[in-house]
Amino acid sequence: MSIPFSGVAAVVGLGLALVIAGPLNAQEIGARGGSSVTIGARIQAQFEASSVDDTPSSFFIRRAWVTMDGRLNDLVAARAQYDIDGSTVLEAYLELTASEALQVQLGQFKKGISEFWLVPNAWLPIIERDARVTGVDHCPGVGSVCSFGRLTGALGLDNYEPGILAQGRFGERFGYRFTLTNGEGIGYRDVNRGKSASGRFSVFPAAGSRVSAYLALDETLDSHGETMGLPAYGAEVEIGTWLDGPHLMVNALRGRNWKLDDDAKFSALQLMAFWYFPLAPESHFAAVEPMVRVSWVDSGAEDPDKVTGTVVTPGVMVYFVGRNGISTNVDFYTSGDHSDWSLKVQAFAFF
Image 1 (cartoon, rainbow, N blue to C red):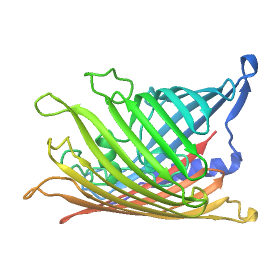
Image 2: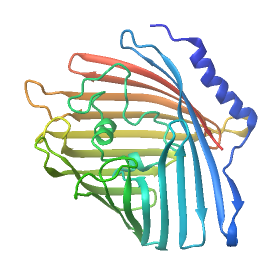
Image 3: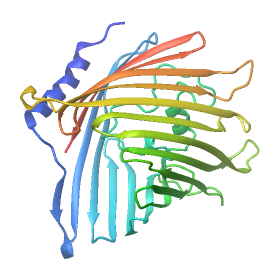
């Protein structure tokens, strides 16, 4: 399969433009009564090529977002985030911070239980969290490839929804996050009286380390039209922080693959490792960050239709200035005798 030079050149061209432009920072402006509003934007342009026969390679705008953060005082803040490419409101909430131990958000937000989904895509050099391979659509129930990110995203465990969120820290050692949402996705009214709940409890045994346990009760309709509260539970270990030397994140999750059938139970494991290396100023680059992801999933389908999938994603992110740069990933996917790959190159620009 040939890869069009024009697609790669366009991504590299955007990256070179970032170098020439210099630092790009969100802009803070004064507002009424001493409050402030910060306006920022992100553009992520992607080139993708798949090994699947008759699947064309493509260059496209992956994200074009505008974010407005307003702050009235230490107690009251708000956010509105728009996907201007898809004309969608992603986040829109009022935030009340009573103390370090209690912060409440009312509105629409990402309800993710794992930090893998909660960390902003501005910080994550893994280009696609679900490790999609264009042209592959065989994972039972959820389609696409069988990966940790695909299962959690397609089953609604880690998406944007309206509701209420409470989170906080108790000193240096303990933290929590709890959400109660509609369970219907972005901007939709509820269709029944049930609500989706998720919770995470974290322990911070030392600086730069975290161990979390999480649980979700996701309400949906079963094959008979009855409301179900489907449990999913898992654990996460994180050592290190973003953009600062070595960094490891490990996830384990088990839940119901309700898109397959009412009783299917999936299992998922994922490991990600990064190493952020700052570079000397005379190099004209800020840093380089090699990375690898390994994901394994049992979709919950039973014999003779049992399907498991493994994704291995090596990659590297080159930072021009701040978080602006170019990331390259190759998602290698195998499932039984099925094997495919996807090359992704993405330019990250933040204003």
